[in-house]
Length: 573
Image 1 (cartoon, helix red, strand yellow):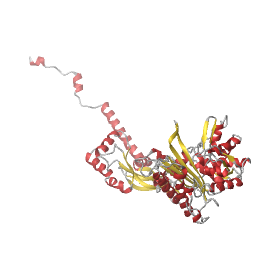
Image 2: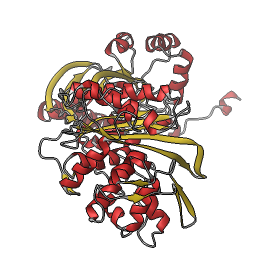
Image 3: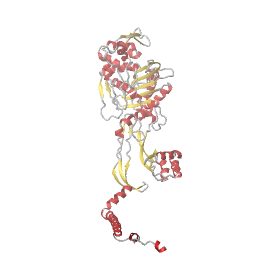
Image 4: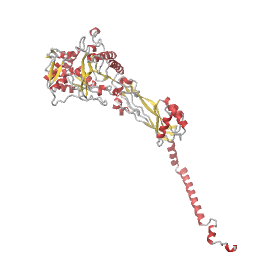
């Protein structure tokens, strides 16, 4: 029975149980040998024939081209004293994908960076898919060293430069500031950003697998520092001007103020101060009003300080002389429905008397007796209603009324400083024509190396006549007596004007101004002082701005070694 159930092996089953052999065995063996030969051949090729490939691949992992920082050019005053310099700093950055996940290492890194550990861990988490993040920027080398010493994988240091401003808030609006990337953002830093910016260099370095520097190999391109900028201001005068302006603003409980001092022979800006200001080295709490260089960017109605400039047009017309008489009675007049008033009835006045008493009626009579474009053209010749051309960002052109259909009321108002807008810098530049034999000097914020740019806008005779008239304003018992400087004869003009807003003239807000030339006999400086909205009693320019002028100009004349031109007892207030 069992014999009948036993199955005999078929040919097919015998073949399946036979050992591997024949063609398939040798086929597989050949494939393996060919692959091995190809591998050995490739190794020989790369190691013997084409060795540069492996060398390049290795270099790609260890050689790097690093940028060499180029420092920004220095800004200095006319004597070479620094106003803006670049100091070396260290910026720490990280590759989040290389940073350790160990919380202890991250905590130690946070402590070395002086940041909150949880904040650092959160930031690393947010940048987990990226290859770059800043840890801390612009640290001093001493501040960065503790974090560098930890040698945390994925943490790197980069040399940079940070801008420092030795004069601080004293010259902040003029010099301006840079951002964290060392690019100019305000003031002359912005205006001359391309010139001041350096050109980075390049070097090839050898690094280890953690990105640390092993060796400097060679220089590819040297860094080129930015150009240096020498300003026209004298830092000694700038400090003094800022101090006295701040004292005047504080004494009068004012909102702010501006001061411009020009060299009467070249037009160079020797000092330019504004309040409020800010500290460019610490911008954590900046008053936005302090960012503006008001002396250049803010145009205001100037008021009576314009009267000598309008009078120059009258004298040049030939219709008026210093001996002419103008009847200002009864002290008021109506033009186009508007009432113009004097402080009181001054009766008959000469041009010098009109300036001395600051008679609006006298100036209105003169303006209306002349062709309507006479004073307007003189203002244009003096640079009003036009860009000063300093190159300062946002410099204001001011404004003059249109000559087309100019009403008589506007024609009269121009003569006593209403209905127009000028900046303190424009006003100071216009006064250089009186100080410089009728030649208006174009203002410059940079120290000049050649002849100043100028325009002859009035005859020297007219300029001398105006100087003599303006000297009478800065005498004992005159309206500008507080601008007197012991030992020097001063020529100047006071001005008081209501502030204008979108709702019109304000009833209780004023600006007080004083514009003057010193010494009158041989002018060296022209100075304009503006006190904005004094709230402590008096607001007249002769009472709030003239004292600041006196202190600033007195100190400036002594610093510039200008000899006194008369005994002090004759100029004592």
